[in-house]
Length: 420
Image 1 (cartoon, rainbow, N blue to C red):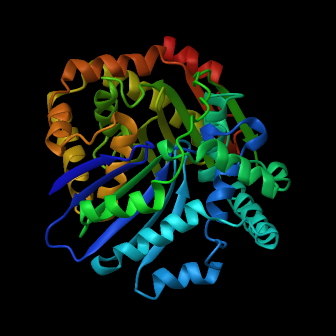
Image 2 (image 1 turned 180 degrees about the vertical axis):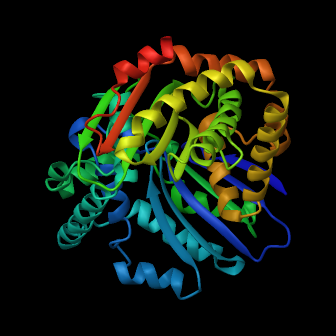
């Protein structure tokens, strides 16, 4: 498997990886225009724009967009994150040129028909309502908001209903002009793909775009704080976040090893102590998230209201214990799990294409899998114990609670337990 890269004179980037033996390909356009690139009055517009891409172009109706890909047995979708918006397709080898044409059409030529804007506005408002009715979704938005208050990185991707209700055709067009320049786009493809053919197609479809400077986005500042919403639910939802490294920081691999040991699977410390030994919850996990300039180590659990205090205390105690008695065996197991998860995932062309785009976004190049494996293997016991000590005692923290949580510990009391 060979990774190849090419940049057009206007800054548009192409990255591909041919995977021998496959008869299908995953291809997509990743635009560096996510939630964190919005001004406060634009909150939710990147996601709105993603929806509108499928609602008609200058040459295709919404139905024709769907039929173009589905008539050849393919799949077309998109997503918006805090740092990118992605439009992608999965098709058979012979249909890669068609997918390229459709993707470029929906990204470059949306018509923003007023009727379709109103239809999709209603769909997105329903999506917002559904998210608010899903406790183990909305609690992470609240945690993010408290971790990064009054910042673009702390605002929700969907945006508030009142903003979504007021977006106009001009608002959508303005965001495209601000953020959809060729230098902010990455074409990534993996599977049965021909690099030279895709570069030629990119030159024809994107080469005419004039380069433009994208406005800087707001630098993240982890502040921390507490959000508590009391509601009569069956479960109390608990999410705690700690400031962690960004994805270019040398500590990121130690953070990922630590998250795996603490709450990455059935053998993890939190799962064993909180669920298996004490029966305090059904779900508990830890994960290390990272952005361009910050990161957040998150712990989530769902439990009953009367057990939440014990669960919170045990969680903090386990974090402290990990800093003192973590073993080489745990480090080795975490390394193996991380490498296996990565390598298994990369058997999928969709995951390969996603990785290509993300690596080019972060590094401007695609590190080989062997390079990543070496970095994981280089993480030492002392690296992880040092990181664990920071998480347990001194890292700034945020807390989100939802459900029967009136009597739950406060962030202040939890901070006191960390410092004790």
